[in-house]
Length: 545
Image (tube, rainbow, N blue to C red; front, side, top):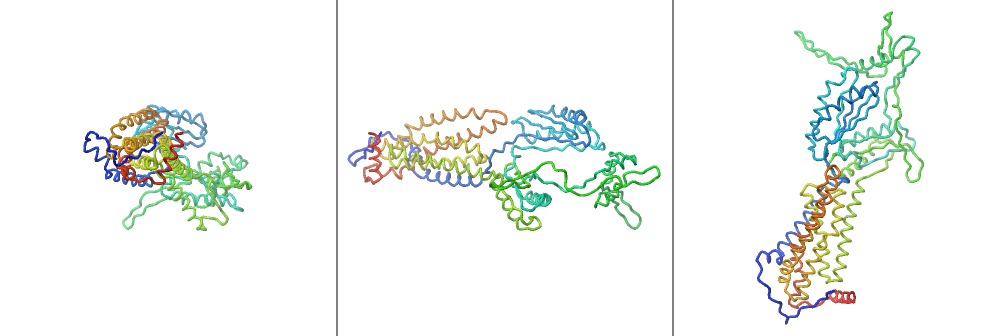
């Protein structure tokens, strides 16, 4: 353990070989160091407030889901006439990683995933083209088959916010109507892609056939279904012209009221009597069939029915900003009686913004703890001056790393923060090494500050670079992992390497020159020991014993 051997005026520092002017400019002058500190601090603040903050990183991989509906068709027919035909076209795509399919009664679903390295826009466009090529081979739409629905998927399709609507004395109908109104309002918020509802029941028109009357009149259920489907259509007719006027004719065939539907002709009997829908079926308006339920018990209370709203953001947008905008929109909607029924409340079931804030606070706390630990160690091992310099260099390094990651286009996500926390234990060595060199040159060898700074750089810059390079090369293979997992994992070594490179540059270009403010005034023994100096000596001596 070294203690301070304060140089005296009678002690002349040993002569050193003359060094290049550029070394004196960069390592003994504070101009570049001050400008670099200002740049890193301002850049770090700009990067922190400008970077997109999200949980999982936005990994852009070409994925899509193709859904085809054909009402009244059994699963075997869907498999042979729809799913197989689409798969035959899809499997010839270039860059295809995997695809899976599931066929049910009336529905065919195909999930397609491309390799992580495949370009997203081009791959999705080629997939759309293959689906269009398969259309002529599929059953005609006149048979009831609907056009294939194409949906591009994202790794960020999971909800970032889940809200639960509830209220004493409010039944499912009122809650469902309020939820649908809120869905429309929230989907208009910037960077909200969609709002999904769970537990709601929509108001629909029910047509409940009466089997006995159908049998008596000799009418089939398919005949009624075709009559409803064919009658509920608006169609444009031709343009009529004469010498005086011209008019566009349009047939309004869609049902506007329940009476229109009840009076729909569904068949004509042999005696030319028209059979209307109300004769063979009960037609009424009511809630759709219940497919799911949502209940909530809040802080030990009884379970109450709820409607859940799940908010999905636009990929690449800031999660915290989107959640704050959603909550502000909810408070605005609360003031509108036509949207918000009396007595309705909402609860936050999940909030990714709070999790991200906790991670950011944890990162800041780790940086603070690391700075305090380094300060405490160097306070005992060297002096309070070196301890203070090293403690301040750590947050400056992270500010510079955030600035660099922002410039490179990365977001502030979980994987990046994991890499920065991992780098905490790796980047302090270079600061300690440089400050140990300065301490040895000034307090042990009696060199002036410029001489000690130059000697420290020439002696320790090479070994420090070799040590940082060893760590960088140890992390670099993680960047070579392929596939979707590789795109997640590589963010960790990128963050670590960025912090290590930044720490090496700061140690040479900031720590050494800026140390002159605290160490430069002891070069000729003109500095008197302060209380902290004497305290440091006493602690170091006791620690050495």
